[in-house]
Image 1 (spheres, rainbow, N blue to C red):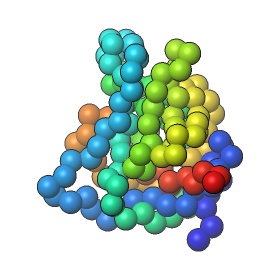
Image 2 (cartoon, rainbow, N blue to C red):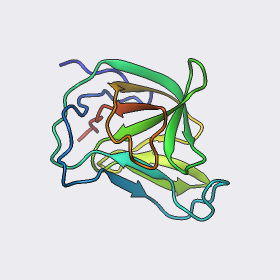
Image 3 (cartoon, one colour):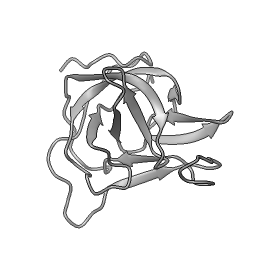
Length: 149
């Protein structure tokens, strides 16, 4: 299935469909050294799908700016209206602080984007993980993006 081009120069090739196991909460990735107005001293967080959860390509597109919210979560400020959209990332994705900004890395450790970067994410609307602390009014399941081997 053809993927949606992501602004970081990789293509999307999977995203979550189906429900999580009832005995498992979604994962949250955190990193070191982040201080924000909403969460002093706390690292930025990400909503992550589980390692063994199925993925399927979704063909939606979310353009906007990568941000860290007042809840100290990696999200996107939509380019169409400025709305904050929570992001549901693939297993193994991380956010770290580098030179004072949150930097998102894919499951292979390759830099995807930095806080403040304009991005166009492939994926689709999601109603999963609505009880997660990072959840906003809108949630977007980001397609997993392969890295060059």
